[in-house]
Length: 474
Ligand code: FAD
Image 1 (cartoon, protein in one colour):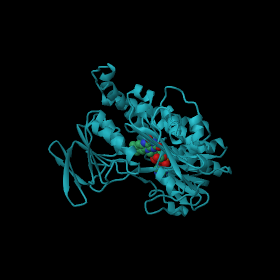
Image 2: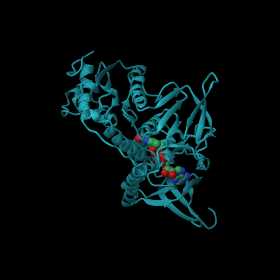
Image 3: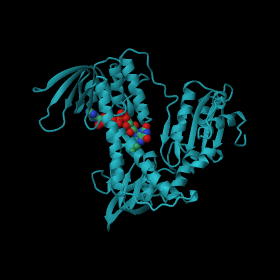
Image 4: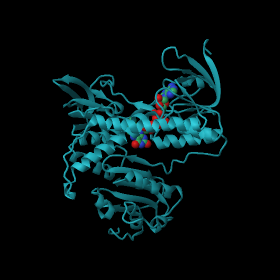
């Protein structure tokens, strides 16, 4: 202990108050554990402050404006006036409401909140340096610790986030004026979501991607409608291009890229957004003092109870690896707290959903047909197009489909892929079905409200069974 430090003790020290850490802390509090939650920046972490929530707020607001401006077919004519600064202010209000709620919930569940940056001193204590001059530091001794320090955007050499025209997602979501033109480096989910936001604000968007398609990792027929819609919004794509650097050019900048044949291209813009992925925040924690090693990419290895190689230290959320998603962080946080409290909890990744909030949205859960085959199942597939859904047509958004994947002999649902309106919501029903061991018959026999988008879920199961009513059966 450093002279002048104060020392405190706790059953459970949670480091990082994102959707992993704050959920773990609240659950630990519910289980009557004495818990201290340390946060160096803002309650709610990346998700509430700079990620999921601000991006979805901007997606909703720009989507509303775009839809209103493109509803002549429905007899609606608008003269749109979008004030981006006010839109951002509204978004910040939503964030404040949620982060304030997190703080209140933590306190109501008996969680001790501590502001400061934590690092491990040894296997049973951490040093917390409080922010601000003269605020000092303290040593917290713990029985158990949960590492939930999240991730940060990967920086591409030649693109420093400190330089004005270079933006990461957090900086892009805080812009109070839409740039006239924007190069986005990376066509992953963050790049594609923000391409939609800025294109709908009237920005001239160019996306450069090293690989050969948008949304790498998603099946082609899910990614294709997203690319098509983005192109309709005016987004210009360049694949097989690696971003090399940028320089000032007249009133804007020029971004230079190189393809695998060494050919150089230049793209002019006002700003450049770098969205090539995220890396875990584990290098500032002095994990070695606690006896924990990371892999080469900085992730902490854990078992299905969120335990690291040091039995009483847990790691959850983005630091514990893919999928780097908020609900995965929260699930791991709940399990870590329950395991510490002696409950027989474990994480089951089988029905872990994922969503991309592009237009159209994507929602997936469980296995694809190819993954089911690889795992030795005999998959059968059913699909239902939103073009055949009455409700989809009445919303003016009828692109895409619902697909279910099931094991043919047993009928058990194995996975689902949805691209289309409200895919992020619709996938929840199929997640529940997989979690509960439902069969195609169960989903097909469940009466769905008419007219709703969810009827497409029922009809896709019926299609797999060969008796969908509103589409031709395979
Ligand atoms: P984080 O939310 O990153 O929280 C970690 C916290 O730890 C931070 O508050 C940080 O300040 C704190 N911290 C770090 N080091 C220390 C330290 N030494 N001491 C004290 N505190 C520390 N996911 C989804 O599921 N759905 C989405 O729609 C979605 N959209 C996204 C959009 C964007 C633009 C971005 C960037 C991300 C998005 N994500 C989304 C991903 C999601 O935000 C993360 O997966 C999630 O926040 C991870 O939670 P976490 O608790 O592991 O870490």
